[in-house]
Image (tube, rainbow, N blue to C red; front, side):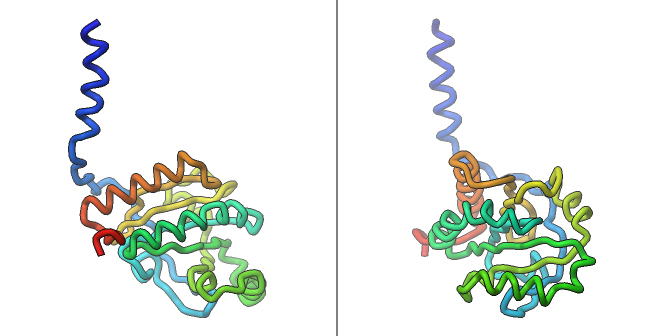
Amino acid sequence: MATRSIVPVLLLLLLALPLRAQDTSDLVRFPTLRAENLLGEQFAIPDGLPGEVRLVFVAFQQRQQTLVNSWLAVADQIEADYPGLRYFELPTIATPYRLMKPIIDNGMRSGIPSDDARARTITVFTNVGDFVEETGLSGREDIAVFLLDAEGRIRFSARGPRTDESEAALRAAIAALDSDGKMDSAEKS
């Protein structure tokens, strides 16, 4: 009986211990890409993206936009809470479709009236198979959500629409970066 009562106490003690800085030597770096947002601004991804920390939503097909949209209210709130964090949408399209870039971008622009949303929507034309492999994804059937630290390392990833569990895991990853002094939060500003 005594061991059963000790287990919850030990768990509480472990949770109360301060988090140690994570060893980042084994983290995957987000692939280096060059792309242009819907305002015509060019970026080197991830290093040239604004923000100390970047939250990136990757969609592979237009029909996946509703899945990205399920995260946007949370992304807006997180961006307000952490001024050092910026989020971006990366429609990721196979390289041969680059020839259709003006048509694709104009189609997206017509559906996105906000200049803020256009600024954070960066169309990537790349070898999608290589991208999937380099980021450790299992395929392109779902969207991917990545939290990138200042060095472009993937600190968190999730697949699919926002769920309470995936949002909580994302917030925990952001809090860990914040506690490591990797970003500014609104409370500290």
